[in-house]
Length: 236
Image 1: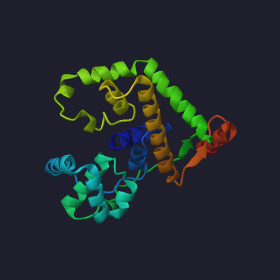
Image 2: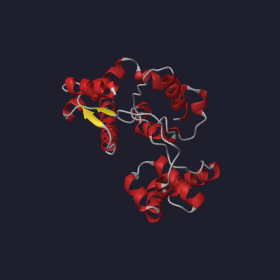
Image 3: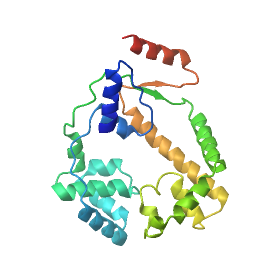
């Protein structure tokens, strides 16, 4: 957000209009609205939580989170160790639930006028078809060879539990890793990866529905409305 803010300021100073496109909703929120102040990560606390998870399981730690921060537990899935760990880390370090931290005022938002557009198919079946086509294209372009190369890296060989790494847990990579470990056949791997991608898309759409100042368009059928919205914004 800090890097993007500097670039946006430079573009505006040159009399140009920045266009931001993506991706990860939290990055946009950090840039446009600012994020609440939060305690920095503490390696010792994280190591202790990882050790507890190895002994008791993440479900048990999720249950612990539900006791100290019910709101966080309600929005964090019991199979999301990264966010469970962070929420408990914040609570153990400060005695204050992460939900309370997130309610506190953050840094100053980006000081520019913005037009927030969400481009998404209205028909969920269309989205599912595109997800399948995209993943098949990834396979055709050597996705499994990429994961094989990742597995062969010396740095990866030194990792005791590679599936616990956030990058390896990413959609597609986790399913490919498990397949290359011998879990299921190629068809099952493809089905699992596509299903996981659909679930990710569903979570993204849920997040986007919380962006109350955004305007939604289906880019393939809303050409005129979309062009009109952009033209009106630029004209101002």
